[in-house]
Image 1 (tube, rainbow, N blue to C red):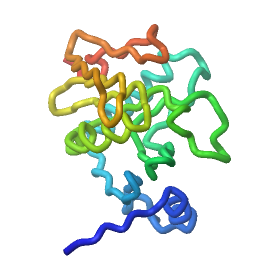
Image 2 (tube, helix red, strand yellow):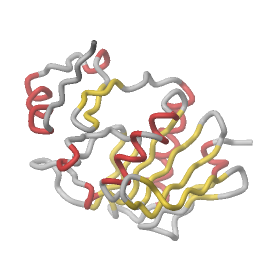
Image 3 (cartoon, rainbow, N blue to C red):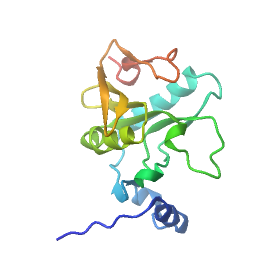
Amino acid sequence: MSTTTRITLEQYDEMIRRGDFEPREEHRVELIYGEISPMSPINTPHNDAVDELNEWSFESLPRRAVRVRVQGSFAIPFLESAPEPDLAWLRREDYSARHALPEDVLLVVEVADSSLAKDRGVKARLYAEAGIADYWIVNIAERTIEVRRDPQGGSYRSVVVLRAGQEARPLAFPEVALPVSRIFPE
């Protein structure tokens, strides 16, 4: 029989402070619903997609409009969670003394290859419960961008799958477009 021990966000922060997950490259984890959850190793297509998303963010957004966070966390205290999405756009604030919270999040993007089931399942539920209005999954296997919006309870009422020739537009900056072909060239 296995037993799952749940921890609080505060306990997780203390574990990080103490260095319990060092060296970082050997302990890729995030806190999801009070459980320390391992993260998939990053492969070359995943790295490339994250790099493109990062460059696109800085090239497309008005200068200093948002804080672009790459593979960093934000906190969802009421769900005892600190996910680490591949890309997050946060309101332009000073986060040196506090966690970014769901109300600070303008866009979350997960790049999915081996993590696709988790990103469509537990991560989508978590982000929807937290009220994240704009959640995208860059699906490497299918060469698509899945745009999830209109969170209600633990799910998104709108899921649109974009393919080559189409583009994703973030809710917070609808004048900014990400062509699917930028991530998946023909």
